[in-house]
Figure (cartoon, rainbow, N blue to C red):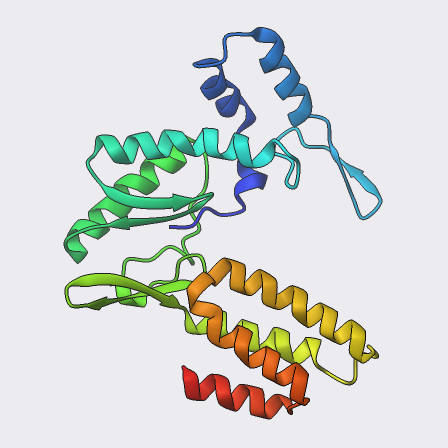
Length: 223
């Protein structure tokens, strides 16, 4: 499941209500309320935030998780197995019919109780091998679910490498190597053991000045 424009649709009154159940110090609630209504500057223009949670602020991820913790508790009370990261959610069901019923009930709770909106285009009922979650896909091997990098994530990685190594961007070799190194570090840190092939490949690419077609051929061969 995916929530549509989460930070732009958070109901501040509902968020304050949820906070008030735990935080009994009115001064803290008042301070958070002022933070929510402080406004933001976008492209040198001031915009009000009286109906949203300012995205990019230090409190925003915490406040969003406080709000969505209500959803976690609801799913736990119903006995569902699920995993949520920020506003991305996967609920595991034993059958397609069960998943469809769960989707309807969960959507009703999100929209009627939390006053958020479910992104219908990105929310689907499907087998685990066909879903994409946080850049990963899943497969079953010997009765166990396992992770692998989703093909779309690999495609985006290739496009990023193509952009970083393009000779038409006006960069010198040193800047190109630095940008590529920073990208590799981020990719490897995120995908961890899945990225060792990419790390070795780019190292070879930098040392031997291989063509980009050689890089992509190797990626295709190893995948």
